[in-house]
Amino acid sequence: MILNIVGYGSAVLKKVAEPIDKDYPNLQELIDDMFETMYNADGVGLAAPQINLSIQLLTIGFRPYDEDTDTFGEKIERVMINPEIIEEKGEKILFNEGCLSVPGIHEDVSRPESVVVKYLDRNFEEHTEELTGMLARVAQHEIDHLMGKVFVDRLSNIRKTLLKRKLGDVAAGRMRTHYRMRYSTKK
Ligand code: NI
View 1 (cartoon, rainbow, N blue to C red):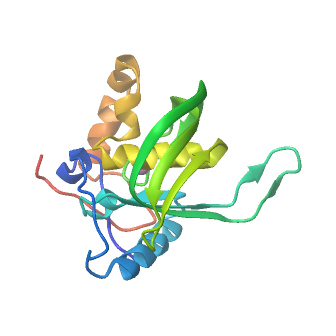
View 2: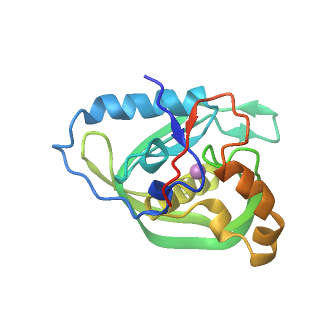
């Protein structure tokens, strides 16, 4: 089932999400719905707060692009429950990010090139994985969502000021999207 995506400015996107355990109701179905919602919106990552659930769950899915051969590789997918970044590695690098909750805005964001993440998969098996490249980037963006942060929060004050009007339009639901969104007036 395709779920509505919550827009920037909604209260749920500013909250720290709660960890979950095995007893969380209909979890497998929820994860499938998140993948369906994410792919339907042409997203590469989705965090549960973006579907109005303040829980520590995220999905990632994309085919990595290889610049040298101009082709896409095998699909990479992850489900992360209660994820935690335990180590940051390498240089901080800029990468152009967007977000399904912030349609129409793409900005360069600085983040570490690699991270070690500890998380549970959909079967509640624990993994400690070093992520690099696109996977590291998407995971950090989605883990931010679980901490109540959106990528525009990481921009400089100057960039934020320049984006103020556009962000206001997003928060007011004035952006067109090809996927369904919901807005909450609660701050
Ligand atoms: Ni996002």
